[in-house]
Image (cartoon, rainbow, N blue to C red):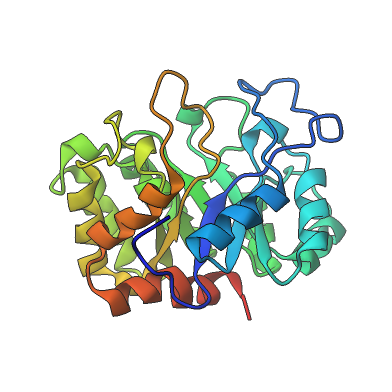
Amino acid sequence: MPRIKAPPGACDTHVHLFGPTGKYPFASDSPYEARDALPETLIALQDVLGLSSAVIVSPAGYGRNMAMLADVLSRYRERLRGIALMPDHASDSEFERLGKLGVRGLRMMSVGRGSHVPHLNPETAARAHEHGWHLQFYPHGADIVDYADRLLALPNTIVLDHFASIPANGGVDQPAMRTVLRMLDTGRVWLKLSGPMRCTMEEPPYPSVIPLARAFVKYAPERLVWGSDWPHVNMNGRTMPNDGDLFDQIGEWVPNESVRNRILADNAKTLYGFA
């Protein structure tokens, strides 16, 4: 059980779902497969943590097939929102269909993430913007420095995954950190305080991430959201984090309760359109 008490409306803005395996097969070029992580299991976990809602990020393991995401959103319209990995040739009717189900953005990634994931495509991003979607972008290492201006040239609101992938061992004065702060200055860039295990190889509780988190909280608390990255895929050979402990980390990152509640609930409502 977590020590931190979640406020009403608290949201986990970054989770993945998988399965049932027989119904939703992994893409042929997926570099990984995962055990079933079903919405019923997620909701049971949320009930333990005191969370009210979640944002389902369609996993790269399913490629550009949005069948699982669409099915889950259709079942949990009030509780869940979605982020899609859209095919570049997707029709306007598909954007509209997914938007009505609760998709609020599309995800693209650095080329450093591999050839199996969607890379930055300004044309597809612009089409998503026409449907009111933001762009969620996952850098690789410190390469947000290379992508920042290309992202800011897009019309979309930009959401950066997992601390923008900034290498935590580089500290708060590294170029990647300064770049993200510059992006936050624009007023249309958001950052996920999520997946600390994605920017360090440390064991939990990932102490090198604390200075980064506190710096972001001090700089732009109005455009931060929190996410767990459950069920924590691709952790082979590493310690699997306990989700209660992960949630409690936000108490270390954001000691001020009112600021913490804003990040957990109010900001997520604004960004994802929860009631």
